[in-house]
Length: 109
Image (cartoon, rainbow, N blue to C red):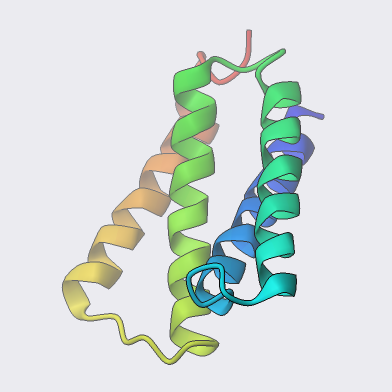
């Protein structure tokens, strides 16, 4: 169940971070509300994840997946381009998450 909670936290954080861009520095009301709600949901589900997963592992997975998803949203929604080093770096982040998930014995208590 901890990975479901972590997935919900990643999605909520991704929505919240995307809304930061849409809020235009918090000058637009509804996107600003989405930012607050998105991060509140993300932190709540992160707290549930921490009941069974060490904070370092949880944070690595949460931030890594968030970076990749936000970069993809930036590319497809906001038209922000990614160069080869950025793509390679994100591939390494994903590889690190896969390695933690498949081989680490510290991913759960």
